[in-house]
Amino acid sequence: MTSSSTGSSRAGHRRGALLAAVACCLVGASFTANSVLGDYPHAGGQALRYGLACLLLLPLLGRGALAPLRLLTARQWARLALLAAVGMVGFNLAVLAAERTAEPAVPGVLVGCAPVVVAVVVPALDGRRPARAVVYGALLVAAGAMAVQGWGRTDAAGLLWSAAALAGEVGFAVIAVPLVRPLGARLLSTAACALAAVEAALLGVVLDGRAWLRMPDPAEAAALLWQAVVVTVVGFVCWYAAVGRIGAERATLFSGLIPVSAALTAPLVATGSYGWAQAGGSLLVGAGVALGAGALARR
Image (cartoon, rainbow, N blue to C red; front, side, top):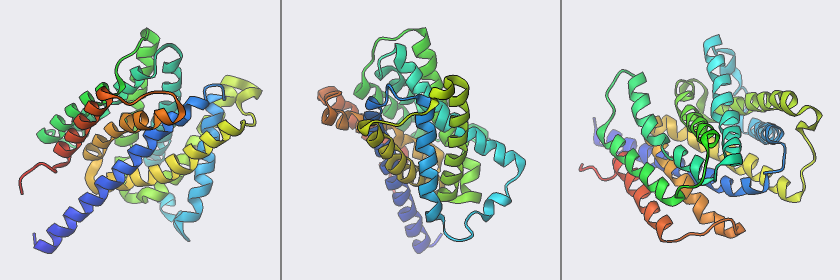
């Protein structure tokens, strides 16, 4: 490998790491926005969020950018629908269901274990052994996420829904891996949002009937706009671009920044505080990301 190709590879990895960090920080800030959506119809809110995000993403695709969708096989379409159902709609509804009987820290801690699961699952699906540095880094990230979140009261239902949220977070990374290359980050995000909006709307009609959608109040509208415009449009494109550059294993390490970002933004709306435990957990997350991403390796 020439020095120029090595330099471009390192630059690509740096860009991928930056994109993953931006995406996960935006998702973490969205947990703060969720605090004002507790009384809004859950499935209807997801349908609004993803539907609006799809409409905003379409003009960014460019002319003829939808052509790759016609080349997808039935199996790839099924994978895309599963990504929307498990990694998007399912994940968000599982978090909301968990928080009915568990404190928010409980699903937060389990979701913080996603880097460990992905670090093992993705190599296994590829028929290779997990990278030792990535696994060790993922363990540090999970420990840091637990320190940031703490642990809260829960019951069996809260634990089960929290485990379902963990499965959704893992699915969001793993299910999408074979679709990143043929579709690209923007088209993948657009198609997944379209399917997620349809799936959430159908689920809302089945579960809530005519009450599945209503006009949001100003605070709810602001939270939904934040989730659609910033978290989904910007965050999803950054995330899948990062997966394409550095792979799902290393990109998922940055999900440890989600509870860190949530802890940093919670004091802004008086829903939490940032103290020594959060600071120590943030340092653990940073060390785990650096180790797993290879920043601490010798050249």
